[in-house]
Image (cartoon, rainbow, N blue to C red; front, side, top):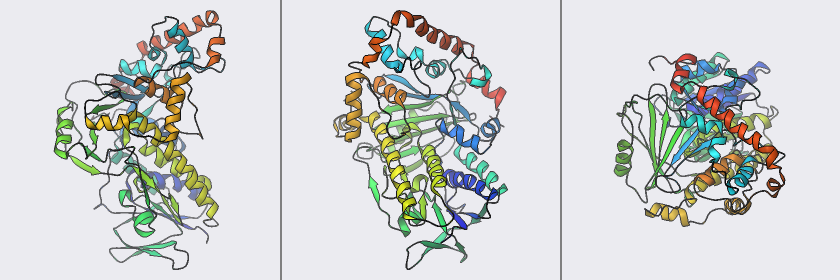
Length: 502
């Protein structure tokens, strides 16, 4: 059956990201793209922190960066500050850029390890631009200072997810996407193939289509309720199953920092996402070890401003659908699975899901090979992200609560066990199957949470350090200089992308 009509079920970030991307198909083909959503159904709207590939997504849509940030009250993000994860009082940055740079095929953290063992007391953080800029609250884009002798800066955004969805709605509708208001009352299936053929809305109208994209959130209206796909529960590795979200004013007089904060508490962790006009806050926790009232109290006690809304309590189960593509339904966002926002992967998984869909899509119909390839590749991506999140909980020395005792001693996937053991042995990290998180990300979290390198790449000892010493010193000096001359993040926002009312 040829694909002449694509129906997206659900709006929010996932739905309108899909609609905006798929709207570009209309430039080369006469295809209907419809989105069904109801204003009566709210969206979760807590995924306000992104990672660097999101910058590329908006560039592909040809959305002007300054206009995007102004419209979404957005700020820049160059990493994540994690506090209290290894031990209470610990603090480190997971940066978006690398430590130094590779020399003669040897990753810099191996070279640093040799320097450190030889008595050089400089912490590895001084060799990372994003970390040093974050410490001093500075920011500039690479094009603002483009010089070959200075390192680039890698960044993402903090955005108001609701405003971003509204921006993408305008974008998609201007390119021919048709929005239908209404709640889905029934899903009609073909008796022979089991494919979804149409949606029946509460007002009696029907929306037919050939390919359906399920962006209906946790409910999984099509992928689960209609097709019974099944869910793979990962709570034995990621035990947090609740969150309370609460925005607040920034009352401390400071400008927004260029990083997300993730602060561990006794049974979970708290996020702080700085926008131009407010902070987004939330507390992710495990209901087995903490009650809702206690979680809310901890959140309010650790915010820097007064709440501007009522608390929004969320329930979730970390995991994924057993299939992301089932028959003629592709699930995106929360309909596909959920992994808590600790490393800001929610929007990224929407983005890669859309990209993968477009890559395998053909207009002559849905085939089993497309479905199988999509499910296999997406499953690998989810598993790799899952392992990285588990690392944060498992790599801890905390023993101050039953929650942390559980996380520290729990069995973890063999893939993660091997990664940790290899890093402990000689600092090696292999990036497998084009996984999202690179060598620096794994090294930053492991070292930040007290997993020490017992050795290093043997080639690091073959490098002539007397010849390289000036080059290594030059890396630090360039970073120190650049972090010093960069403007404050708040000042940069005011000059580059000021948001109305911020």
